[in-house]
View 1 (cartoon, rainbow, N blue to C red):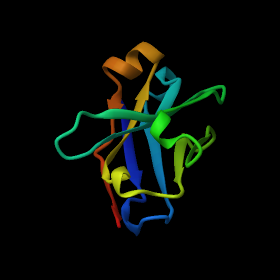
View 2 (cartoon, helix red, strand yellow):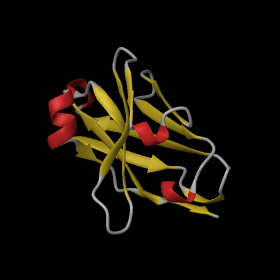
View 3 (spheres, rainbow, N blue to C red):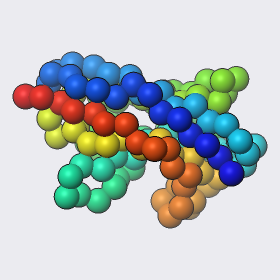
View 4 (cartoon, helix red, strand yellow):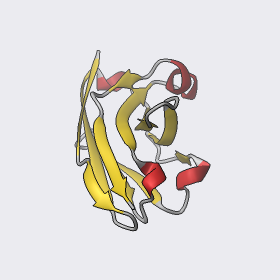
Length: 120
């Protein structure tokens, strides 16, 4: 099992920035991909950004150029720097971890979620 603990959500005005952190523990040897999903009220959960163990990144089109994902392998921690935030970025953000891209899309490990609210 893999445990994921998030931090860093909150309330920010449009145009502002937040940084999310997620620390992994447990059977982390099985994890190659870490990153973030989000779920807004009434919408499906969507992948926001992920990073592979080698540093390869993948972003949703809606956040490209505004969000940056990074990881510290020594700390088993992944970060999401969110800049130029928009009200439509308001959602619960979930840290996720998976062995493969297929697992990422189907059944990743989940954190408990952290609320991000962007006011207009």
